[in-house]
Image (cartoon, rainbow, N blue to C red):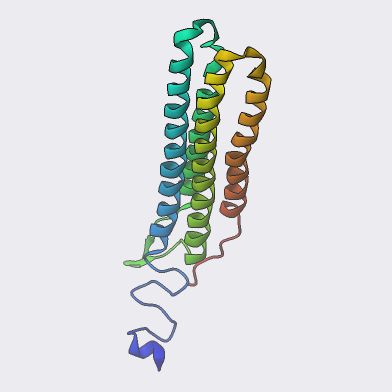
Length: 186
């Protein structure tokens, strides 16, 4: 009775799409891919900009240390690459509907859309957090490096732990995106 009130057939289909495979499912997958790119690159951009200001400030007094101080900028760029990896993996798993006997047959489940959205958000927000941490450490660390070069190893260790936040997000995103997503009913 409920199915008929929604305009559904006995098989549970609405215009070729089931409740397990709605037409909106790919939207959530692509939203996850976009979120991974946007958030991770937002973190990378912040980390690069914030570290760059510290390098510029330090470079005025100690130009010999500028090349050493570029490490935070490189590490911030790696965070953006994590977002790119996640977005590419998600987008290659999204399947468009196919035409079968003149009607669309869905290929992408709502579970897959939710898993890919969660994957993108986990990786993206982790990249954002890593980029902010790298930016703050890179700014203050490079300025301190200009005053005391012995702080270099300590700054690098702190940056490694900040970068690990983005790596954790990448790992979780890969696990989410590799989850079994089921198939659409016929």
